[in-house]
Length: 234
Image (cartoon, rainbow, N blue to C red; front, side, top):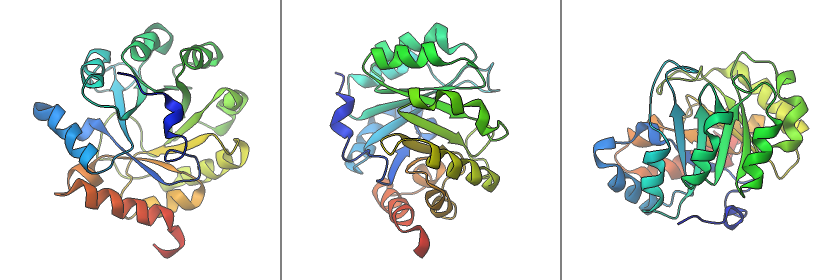
């Protein structure tokens, strides 16, 4: 079961505020039920944070887990590979059914071949940048991207504090990329930070604690969407 990425063009468009629940924060003892709860909350996609214990100092899950859930849901799968050798493993995540695969410029300083491979497989190609990495590192590759992800925490662990100093980078990227490219932000996104991220130009917001620490996922997601859609009022 693999949805065509184009089916989300309307609801997942670059100018529409979209919340991306981070699977890193779910109850892994009841993963299938957590996915059902997110479907009931009208989630548009699931964000998979893949960590290898090398590129980042933490381990999460791999392609096998993603593949097992692909059989259970038609939700868009947005994979964020925080791994040291994405060229070696990216095909596994494409085969697992990921609709979007994002790699880090810090792990792949010359990412053109990998981004093209992702696109050739029919998925969206994404490039992520860490908080202290300058914009100039990703600028040459933006035309090969369908998604750009700005980290607003140092990657590796959930629940970290949002770093507002990345917002200038978000604005710069928004001015540089085509309107069709999705600009995402990940790290410390919640009710007190999402409006500033939206005002800077982000439209896809990865959220973990702000959703999964709430009793009602639907209410939490609608509140985040509202703040992101009306940043001047938040």
